[in-house]
Image (cartoon, rainbow over all chains, first blue to last red):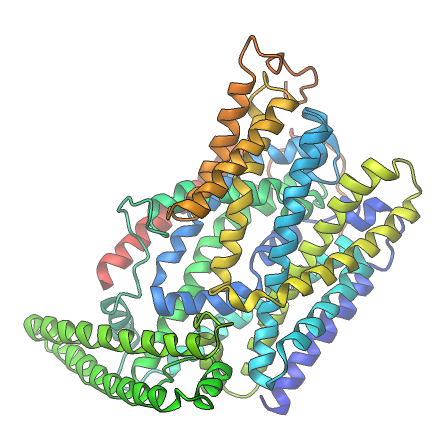
Length: 571
Length: 48
């Protein structure tokens, strides 16, 4: 990074922190601090929703995901637009009608306090852990760039976010989210445009796309049904629907965003806009990863993209073996370039036979190169047992540092920070809201002044921020961050969603049956996670349907849990 | 951006500012998804 890069990054950070504190400076009551006085227009709600979901993990890890696994990850988001429609019809008017601060308040209206508390605690555990990952992601950037100790970096980043989130509450979070998303989208398209200029002059854009496709990186759609296949159309549209329904409908970090809308219309439009643009946005991010892969096919690349781990291996007894693998990898890279050029020339000459022949050779060499890369990864893991050897999170950053011009590197770093700060801020704000509204105010201090509640909300924001930083300390052992976050969410979201679907749609079920059903549903998810190799997206289905089925069974006529619920707000 | 409060209306009975009805907007969102899936499928087939 040059001075200009640092200037761009520093200006962005200062702008975000100062702007956030300034926008939230007039919070004098709980409504203002937790819901921004319900004053947001739809575009602020929409960008806030998008910025909350699109963390730095999205920007750092997703292109790497496409680089190693192709674009099939885009299918993960297919259920999201459907969930946006369902939530606009059901959850938005209901939450606004009840004027709740958190989604879990509604559960006490509908069932009882133990169901509300169970859902709130599941959320606090899941979101508290996931927030650690969103802090860790930009910390990786700085540790790679500056060689800083990761622990120190985690604390520096986390504290910056805590300052403006604690000071400004939801107003600060929503307003900064808007501009953070503007920075993210601007940086995204700039990066894609510049990445394409890094292709050799003799290779056109269309040919680059053909190379990516031929090497298996443009596998955006897979209609085959396989429960063990992590990303296909069916897991995306069904499992992704349940996950999105739960995330946007019951996770306070998202519910808090659209509850801040000034009307049902503004909240709905915010959700529907997200439903329109989320899938294409993810497609573009993955496409960047696929194009980075193609650029790397024309240049020598390191066998392992984590420079810290590479240095560690080079200083170990395995250094010679590692260097041999790098030499072998370079030779295979050169052989791949020859075959790619042969394939493209055959394509230009419309010689299908020669093109297929070169493509077959390319597949064979690429498989060998992958095998060599896996051997190097194994060495990394053996030299440092604390690492899992996964370098997917470093691929995109390595490209940025090696290939992008001065100033743009700073812009990309600003994007990473903006994305991380937006989702972390929303999460801390939601964790504080739930802690204060569903735990503190509900059980310890039922009647208190607004001023007192605002102060303890700020304290809760700081405490959750510190806990998230502590969890971030362990995040480097989790492999691909974007997958780790989604797996973590899937362990809890299905059960929470089951509770809410029972509340929305099943009138003849009461609190105790739902509580026991939720515990049974969560046990089923844990069993799937520990004892089976079912893809994690299906955990959402298992948890949701398990909770619903068990609660209904527990409510069957004749049982003491089967009497109709007296307080139904949906009827 | 200055946020201004709109005139309060009965919750859930508001018309969308465009599209005529909420059903039309919901159909647009779902139609957009179907179109994207078809485009992605064509994209996958064309470049595989």
